[in-house]
Length: 205
Image (tube, rainbow, N blue to C red; front, side):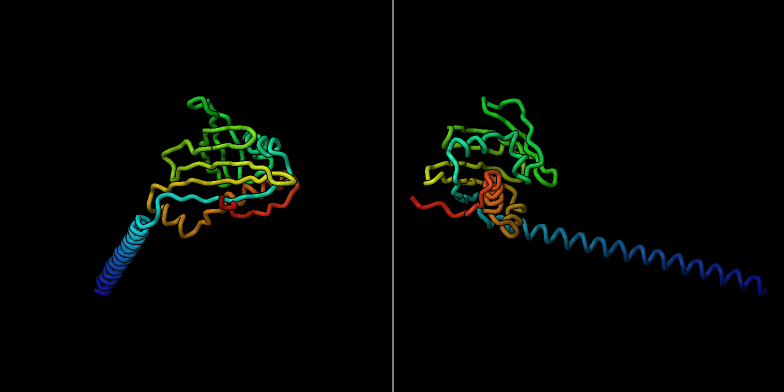
């Protein structure tokens, strides 16, 4: 009789442990489902807010360099040499031309690749490089304009950008400075010439 009671106690204990384990698993699944719902709601809210943000933007920055227009144009148009002075660019690979234009794959910090097409080149005053991957999170172009400014030149970069995806549009609006990458580029370029970049907004014409 005592042995039977012992077995009954063991069986009840095992059953209780099994039910507790099932309850723990059920609670865990409910918490996971709730967390996923919250994340989905946040993503939906960000997307809706992104629809209220402008799809396109335009920003310009200017730096004065004590260099000739030919020297500055040579530096910005020598894409293969950019990684040597711009630490944001890990490597630059020449690809087959597209529509008669140079096409490059530049890999940035974080191993993020971008296809860039040289859509206009007018030495030594103007260069336009356009994002060639239309399926990326953003599209647009950089326009480089070089003008005389004693004792050297002024280089103005104008970014014409677009962020089609409203989720990324909101995130870029909230957490990115629209001038950030132009400023970093201009500072790196000035450093190539052993100069300090004094970056300003371009003068109004």
